[in-house]
Image: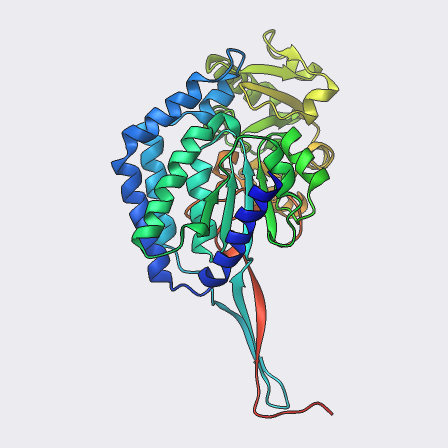
Length: 415
């Protein structure tokens, strides 16, 4: 395993040197070829996915099954994502800043690839296409290590990506998929700081905690998605009903799904009963504080642990707060710094929330499920970063570059 992973990393390191200078037209050709091939091989992808689905234990949650499942619509979306990434401007070579010193030196800050990116993920096989394409378009070689549950689906997608690279006259080592489901591969991968420049973990809390503890390589990470939707006293009730239902129930197994609803006491008796009823009719379990329980007998008592739980299923916790300050304080104590939203017609309250809530993405009158690279116009995303260094929020093309300084002189010497 040690030699296998070192061999993959060495190939990626060598490929990255060439890829950093490949023109955008050639990279785009590879992506468009891959998009075409994904559509042409839809049936083969569905067969590979059925192999993975059939191997799932009977105890597998519906959220996990949903994340793993490929459908013709999701395969088409994957192909569209590759086309959208191809259509985006090449982030490599952008001039970020330029100035001239009094001695005549011209200094230019230029965007360059990070180098080699390792992506370790679970469940969603579409990550193979999204992450592979984003890393590749931004001039980075990528090593993809999907979860064992999506092994056949991810392998088939990687095979198609390789065909696209070959049609464009590029080395297959630009996008590599780890050819084993053995968990030991992850441990070996995390030691390869000589070859891999950054690791992007995508998966459950236990996976990310393991990677955080073991990795010798810098990470773009988020531990979980405890997202909040706050109903302010000046919220529009119809907008609130629509947004809250979408934020929780559109897809409950995603990290941008709202897990806690906060509501101002002043409007709780008028707004929350209809919001709760909408959610329950949609199949959602409600866990609430004492005031929320008093509004509807179907509400289950919340315990302290609920405010720190990412359910990833049709469960939501609701708490009634005094005002916006108490809402912001609750978020500061319990948020995972992923995505928070305020629903209000009061622009001053909205601006206060947007400026004072310290999360990667903060929204006004919109569903938290919009926190997504595709919805942000990035074509796709490689993950959502909730840390503070380099990248934060959806990680797209620009976030997968760093920079270097180019200094042009005319024979100057330093005194």
